[in-house]
Length: 153
Length: 99
View 1 (cartoon, rainbow over the protein chains, first blue to last red):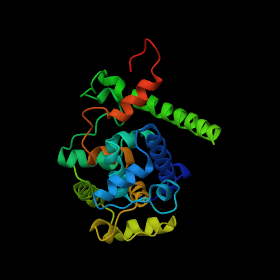
View 2 (tube, chains in turn red, brown):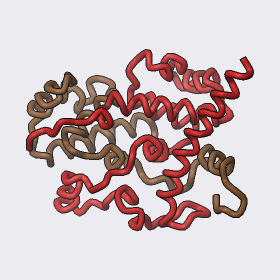
View 3 (cartoon, one colour):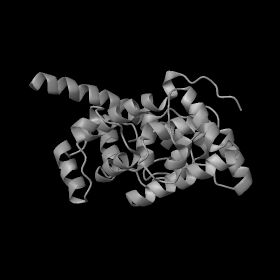
């Protein structure tokens, strides 16, 4: 299996930028300030400098991201759906794993019609589409918040 | 899941995928190194250092596993939409459209 050249879109560094942007937008939308998030994490013995983290001054560790999501009361998959474009086709390796171990395929990753458990108030087949739409709108809102903040300064 | 359990599960699933891929850890390191990403896979998979998010995505790229598929495998699907996203959705809901 020869490695194929990867586009800028799929490098880990590029994806981290998107994670940071999305986290920033979600924090802006939440009732919590960066300082309040830091305080809650510090109370659990986890010190994170939110401003430096969101500014990309150090490498984002997976556990830090999960800690922040927990404070925001956000499920990790909800963030990742906002960050990553859905794959066009299933990963061959996961298909092989499924054949070998009879693993359940993750729901709604490739085919929205595969979603079986609806979120409250949603029709199953539209959940994935709603999340995509929400991602676009969160981006819009983040831009609006940034504009408003700059006007107030 | 607690943060520690989440990390353990992430490492466990990644280990499993590396085994199934048929690629040796050394080969994965070689491919990453060719792209300028130096990662000690052994240390990563044994939890000897804290996994950077970009490193995980890079390893998944070598395995040709889409990150979203991976994370859906690691974390249980959310049973309810988080209040924060529900509020964001409500902010943008147009009259007559389902939230």
